[in-house]
Length: 120
Length: 298
Image (cartoon, rainbow over all chains, first blue to last red; front, side):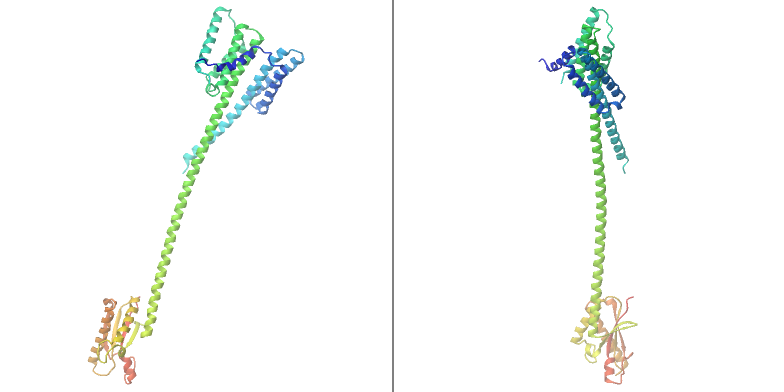
């Protein structure tokens, strides 16, 4: 039997092939929203997350200029990069948080376990 | 969600295509973006992301494939370079999300462990507390039982004391009772006890002596000496014999009625130790007597 579920990813490949499909204004709004989310989660505090946050910010600024000068196609490409950098920044910031939480929980369990071994 | 066999066949397809291209096209150096994308994807493939966020890994793979295809078709174009950049980011994203999933799994497990450890600790504490409470309760019960025992003993003692006291009090109604140095002396008049000049107990005497026996039974300490006395009338020897026989008659009665034989002895003093003047009839009557002496036990 032919499994066709993977076809759901075809639009992703298609969109990557035709970079100008969504309107730059929408892409700009989307990239800015992703940037804000990353900033809210504290991406600036983690080195890797901060790096991609800066890249996204710079690319958004560049895209604005390109839109102003009428080069919407190039603006679209730049925004595609900005979008993914912002998403990566957000994920890296979240990962940092999740790791801290896991470390703390593991440490607490370790402490309780060792207390239990030493209990009278 | 996506069968592994399909991923590996796709990978195989790409590799074949690349080799075919490498053999047929001019040697082309992959762009830095593509190189970075390939290496980022290789890293993700061996990470936990493969199991934890397979959809993300697949998206990264799709992205890489698009970049590879673009590179084949138009190696140097900005579009190709964009795809390479995005493919690298997609792989990095999959890796980060995989790490988040792994951390969340570890957190959840650790939280479960903490919860379990806390519950065990609580159980242990409760058990210890229970044990302590049980011990305290057992001690309290023992104590209460001991107190009860003491109270019962006290009560029993008081009852016995009262009976003994009552018995003594009743004796006073029957006879003259005096505390002397030699002990408690119960004096019974001879005329009340015996037929004249004989050692036979009168019926009424038996009644009285029964009461004396009961009273003595309630006071079971101390040896008893029964002393018979007469007045000075008549021969001393006869009087001594009569007084002894009378003492023995009383002794016999008491022993028959519950007094321990080993405790009682009889003596006859005859006219000796008069308590009254033998010259008067009353005096002589008073001298004709039996004394029951109960030694102090202490």
